[in-house]
Length: 224
Image 1 (cartoon, rainbow, N blue to C red):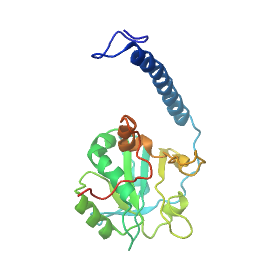
Image 2 (tube, rainbow, N blue to C red):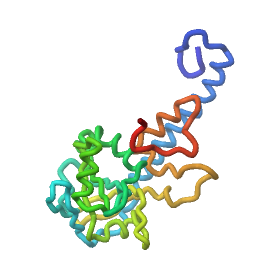
Image 3 (cartoon, rainbow, N blue to C red):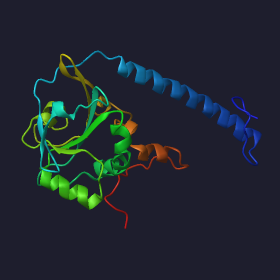
Image 4 (cartoon, rainbow, N blue to C red):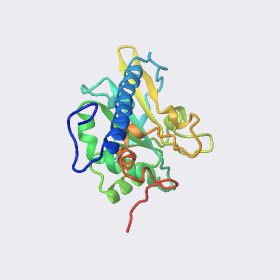
C-alpha cells in the first residue's frame, strides 16, 4: 500500500513503492501546476485587435475570411502554423503533429474553432494532405497574405515557424489572446522548446518510456 492510494502491482518492492510515491507526489504537483497555468492563460486580458480580416484559401479552392472561421461552437479560434511554403517541402515534424491532429480534429472542432494555416498554395497543400490521408484537418493557405509574418510564423527571410496562435471574437472585433511563445523563450541546453506539447501527444508518450524523449531525433515522413 502506498502513501497516496491502496493499489500495488505484482512483486513490487518497498524500495520501488517508496520511489514511486515520491514521483507521484511530483506528478500531483505538476497536475496542479498545469491547472494553474491553464487558469492564468484563460485569465489573460485581450491582446491586440486583429485589424485585417485575412483571406485564406481552402484546399477545396474556396476563399474564407478569418472572421468566417468562427462558429457557434466557441468564441475562440486556434490556428496552427504549418511550416510549408510554395515550392518548399513540408516540415516532417509538423507533418507528424498533424498526423495526430487529423484524427482528433472532429473532437476539437466540436468545442473549439480550429484551423491549420500554411504559406504553401492551396493546390500544393491539398496534394500533401492527400498523400498523408488527412481528411479532417481544416487546411488553409495563407499565400498572398501577411498572416504568417504578422503572427510570428514567418520571418523577414520567409523562414517558416510552427507557432500556435489563439484568437477570440467579441462584439468589438477579433483579438489575439495567446501564442506559443515558449518557441522564442530561452530553454535549458539541449532542451526542445516544447511549445507545442499541449497539442502534440507524441512527446508525452515518449516521456512515459524507460528511455524518455529521444534526443537529437525528429519525426520522419515514414519509417520504411
